[in-house]
Image (cartoon, rainbow, N blue to C red; front, top):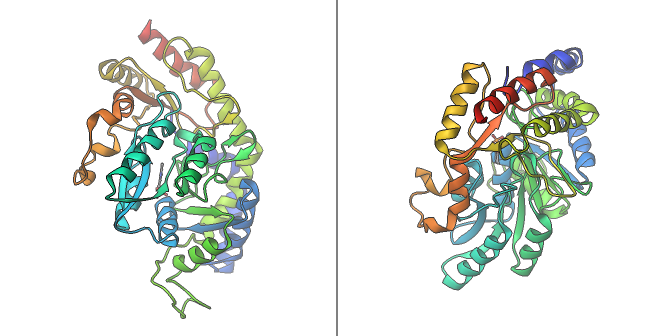
Length: 375
Ligand SMILES: *Cc1c(COP(=O)(O)O)cnc(C)c1O
């Protein structure tokens, strides 16, 4: 069994994918080919954002947003403590200070009450200037943008929606990647919408920010790439990846999103009451980058993981370590009491095989092992 079965996906869409790749090779427009422009248009339409700017990966997408807002030393950027390293890394890379906030135990996303108290505390201390909130749509579930956007407005902060795992989700029909002032996603192969290498995208409705990001991504270009008006980077999505993504986006919309939610339902039916299953609030729709259960404690999780492995079932721990415990952030000062929930989750969470091509038989195999073990 595969944790995320990219081979099954390729098998189903092989002809279209092979044709798309071959066409790019035949045309030899490897950088900035027509597929890149077409993909950006399709992505912005799907998300409901005015602009989509593709780039090299999800981390660079966030860095480009930081550059466009000129985030620098002395600025505070609020991010969830329970996320992939990238979310904090881009903040420190620009010389700003990541301020970690505990998450909600049920949704795994940033705790909006603690977010506001942390912002107030940062203002009162007076050492840093609050600038940005980076909510993460963890495991496919959009964050609570009603609250986040209210708080952002109140304290005059930008919102950067890190939807690397959230592409395809929505709240009452409004798509992930449309909530922040800027939103970013990743096309890393194992993400909900993945390419065959690295890739990423930025979404915004802001004309000025979109122009700036387009410039920053190609060496701070002015009229063209040999007219350089600012210091930028080289961060493009290549044409082959765009061509692959065009095919995969179609599959994603036509059946993958529904299929992955069907897998979620089947898991839930069998695991409810046995272990703690994922919580999707009313009106929210997840693209299920992960299906994550909670065990009683670290020991129980360890034994279950071994049992699953013995039965040929892969499982993963996202995440073993909270952000504030990463060595790279050891230069920052924390109060351990501020991260009670994240510390607990790191000991209890376990992600099970999850992808649109998981069969009912495979789901039952996973559930049989878990049920047999717990009972
Ligand atoms: C994967 C991921 C990223 C980074 O994306 P890359 O394309 O790998 O650079 C950022 N944030 C989160 C939450 C992620 O899961």
